[in-house]
Image (cartoon, rainbow, N blue to C red; front, side, top):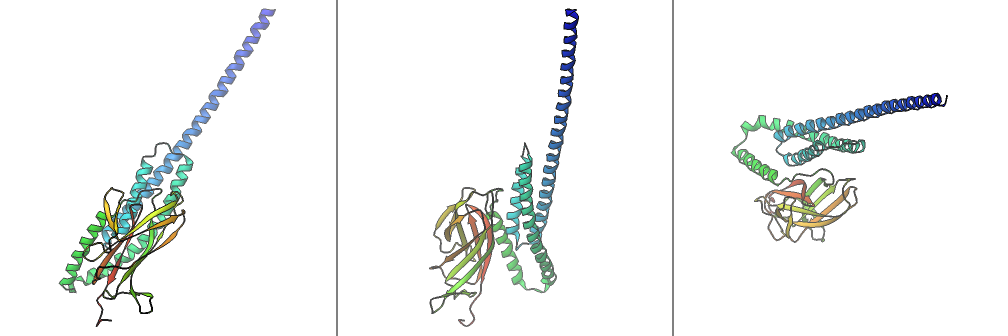
Length: 301
């Protein structure tokens, strides 16, 4: 009697263990299925991000080929997208938090892309109109075109690749020649013979993932011959090369937009007619550029 009872208890325990094992198997399969679904979703999101970046890169390549005058700014943005795409491509273990941060960065890149493409399209239409009239222009235009091509090649060589993430960027870059009035105040001028100083303004963009703190900002101003004016020293680029600079300031960056004004005076070199190149560097990276056009004074005025 006792042996039958013991045998019955063993059977009950075995059945209970089998039921528990089966339940554990079903639970494991569901967890595995959900994990695979999540992994598949993250892979699809990564694929979509790479597709968007590739599309933007191709648009920049086309715009750079069509717009010599904007090639430097467009190249900076294209290289930023390439660096971002490399970062996403090399991502091994994606998670939703990281994908969401990347998608947020995509939104910012797309906003910048839309702004620059609108400007580039407008310039392309203007360039087409100029091309139609080109046959009636004298040999001076041919010489100027050659000079512009040379300057574009130099700017391309100097354009540092802006790294994704914490790298800072600048916009709204302006340069103005200034003359000193008799009342002791500086006013803007476009005449080379009247210029005594240069005022450069720009805005460092907000970047929530950049490291806050003091940032070294340099401006490099080159005369029409390519010589750096009012050289005060050198700084080191990201690639390790030394670059002479015109002026330097320290920007207390707090991850928000920061307007910067730099005033260069006591310039010993004589200003001449022509195009002056103005480049802005922050932490060794080229973050933007503009040009300053000076003309001859008419009858000393």
